[in-house]
Every structure is written in C-alpha cells, then in structure tokens.
Picture 1 (cartoon, rainbow, N blue to C red):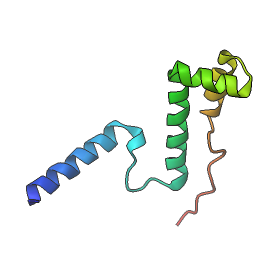
Picture 2 (cartoon, rainbow, N blue to C red):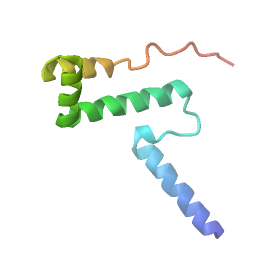
Picture 3 (cartoon, rainbow, N blue to C red):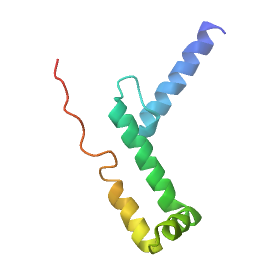
Picture 4 (cartoon, rainbow, N blue to C red):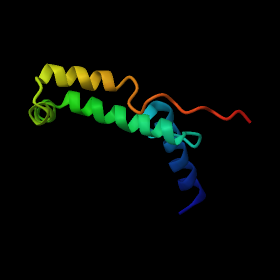
Length: 87
C-alpha cells in the first residue's frame, strides 16, 4: 500500500464521517455510539412495515401504537446522558 492510497482512504473516511452522523469519529463517546445504534434500529423498524407488523403481533399491540412507541423511544433511547467530567 502506497502513501497516496492511505491518504485517499483516510480522506474518504473523513468525508463519510462528516456527511453521515452515525459513522462516528475519534471523539465519539460510548454513550453517543449507543444512541446512534438505537436510533438507527428504531428508524429501521418504523421504516420496514413487515418488521413493524412482527413487533406489533409479538407485543399484542396495533401497528400504529408500535410505530408511536418506537418514535417515542427515539427521543432518549439510552436514557439521560451521563455526567461529563470537565478536565
């Protein structure tokens, strides 16, 4: 691998991280990463009707109620953020 290839790969990675929030970056905390994963999962559940129907049947709720519950869970999927230590 040449130095130019490494530079190209790093610049592509930086571009993806700037463009898409969920790809993360070097300063991403564990909590922020978990929030991104949970929100992405809930958005996928809401966006894919068969998966939403599966959850509705499994929890004995209507599809609309499940969609509403998932949307509410997207607000704070992992609870309140932990206290930050200021250095």
